Amino acid sequence: MKLSHLLSAKHILPDLKSSDRQEVITEMLDYLVSLGDLPQEQLEELQASLKQREEILSTGVGNGVAIPHAFSEHLQDVVAVFGRSRSGIDFSSQDGGLVHYVVLFISPRHIYQKHLLMLAAIARMFSRLETHQYLEASSTAEEFHQLFQQKISPQRVWLPH
Image (cartoon, rainbow, N blue to C red):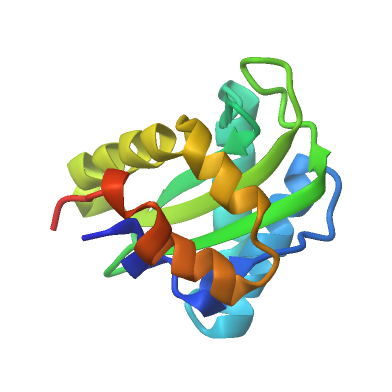
């Protein structure tokens, strides 16, 4: 599975409004609920899980990227959303920098190995300078999605089926 399959244009938020990492996570989860990808009754549990994960170790992996992630007993497939913050968010990243790109994903607990492979693939993709150059030039959800499908194709992120 390619990353672009997880992130349709409707799963891309080109202008995150929140300025705090917990607020951003809530904004992104609320958006997934509004799309119907997450049931409202799971929201509180997922917020708590993601908050706990951030308290243990920040998901700010450096290079302006954070990858908040969690597991759910209630999902049958991976749910993901991408967002960009123009002003940047303090995620207590490993490199001390602000986060401008956030990929939040939630996996069913039974696909633990796939979850780890997705996490590594996303981190690799965003570690490339050319990825950031393409993303900085994008302004709409459609442009971001097109980049995930085409422009980054020489180094396409492949996730296991």
